[in-house]
Amino acid sequence: MKGELIAALVIAVFVAMFAIVSSTTGGEWAGADDQAEDVIAHITGGTYQPWAEPVWEPPSGEIESLLFALQAALGAIVIGYFLGYYKGRQKSSE
Picture 1 (cartoon, one colour):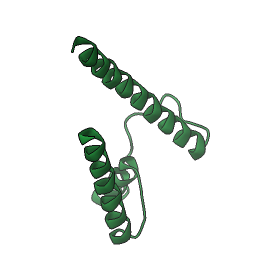
Picture 2 (picture 1 turned 135 degrees about the vertical axis):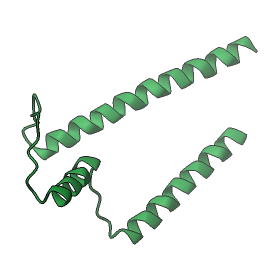
Picture 3 (picture 1 turned 180 degrees about the vertical axis):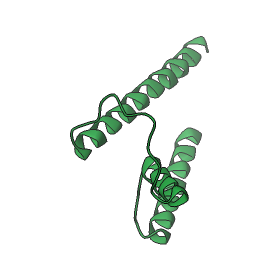
């Protein structure tokens, strides 16, 4: 019961923080790459030329988002697996 209460509290805090940030920032979400690109363009006045090019670029923004979401899902699966493994291991030793 204590674990469920902590999980509910963490989710409630996350939802509250998301609502506060969404309402105060105007709801515009941009990636760190876009924000860094804007800062570099502001500092250099638009004269900056990248010294390296990506090996492969996704053909569209949707595919880029899909790959990002897939990466996040795989990371969550790995983390969940190890949390479950260690929880089961701890439970079996008791």
